[in-house]
Image 1 (cartoon, rainbow, N blue to C red):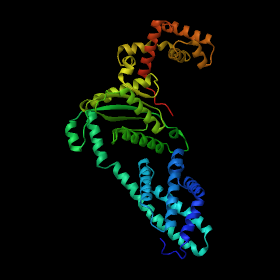
Image 2: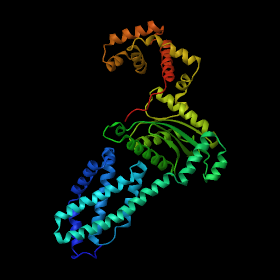
Image 3: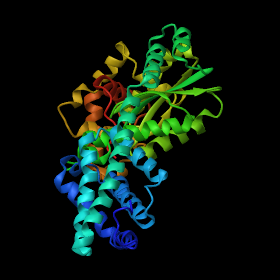
Length: 412
């Protein structure tokens, strides 16, 4: 890099000036990316702050280090650029936008140095930055393409094939041998309801990019928990994950709570999961049960977390299709013409029959609560405050919710 340098101190001088103005250069590059590249303008704010700005800073420091020493860019710096490009590929950022970001950064640096150096030294600065840009673009392109190939590569195809075989109950031993998959004694199946990240709902953010980022974080956390790529199928709103276990019943409650807490923290969204375990040959049955348990937890508005059948035995049974469920739901039909009654009933039962708490939460007088409870009793023939009436109405609400379908996961 020094062969065109008429003054051996010029490289270090350029490096010092870049580092001294690094925050300003970093801010200008980020601002111009947002202004000139639509895809960056619609990235989640968290991604701009944590990834794009960090990559910009590391890129500038790497170039400055090379200018200071006169040596090629360090291997660690090149590896960082590859890893960054791989993340952009996984998030679906177009490669042309990724490469253009580096050219834009180089242009900002050229413009800056053009104001700092005498005219006879500007040519050296341009050549030095062009050399760094050539190396950077090569690393970025390689890292991006490697990740894209990996997404559809043999390993991913093998996991997809194995997951499909387990879920349809195919000859999984044969499929495992063909794909080179080592089957564990059992799988813990998690059926996930994934909350919506706040960035997915913002008009000034690309919701699809935010959703892919969320999915990537959940998948990475699952892989971290198990120490290997997990068999999983994830979308923005739900997912299925098979966690290998040698003894799925050992300390499962505490371990499950930790897993769900880690997943929710990694993606910064609430996650509700139904869990069921079984040997590889019974994964299809476990997946169906896990989905039912998840839906039951959502119908009964349980807080985010992990649930097994044992946690929701009564609720699960109340929501099973059949004549009894239909008759229970029909008990509430007389309330349909009175929109204030059903919410009051639901809240009254959730609050443990505390009429004052209901009044406070609905911003009404306790006497109004009493009036509505009397109306519910008159219309349904069941008194909410009575032991039998309260139990029956609780079951009727569960049946009504189950018949209507589960609500979607909450927004973070």
